[in-house]
Length: 112
Image (cartoon, rainbow, N blue to C red; front, side):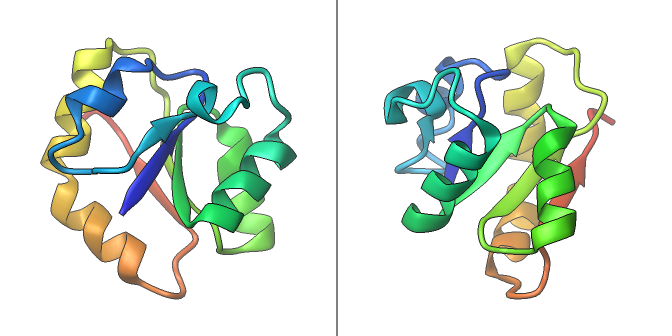
């Protein structure tokens, strides 16, 4: 499972989480920094990425359009990059199950 980290998340997550989510990238790596939500959505859909964002816009797109792509929404997220990393590590099994579920379009994660 490959993750596409939105611009509101640190680029460091790509290397910090490479052991669990190899092949993941940041939108900056895809030339989509400051890209529209539609451009990010289309990129993720065409390349089989799961979008990870702290922005509710992708959650709303996933709820409206359905998968693909899938979206992991870090709801109410104002925490450090290290906290994001810890949550994505803690939830790795749940994320793997979510990405292999053909019907689920979004997964909402909180810090706690």
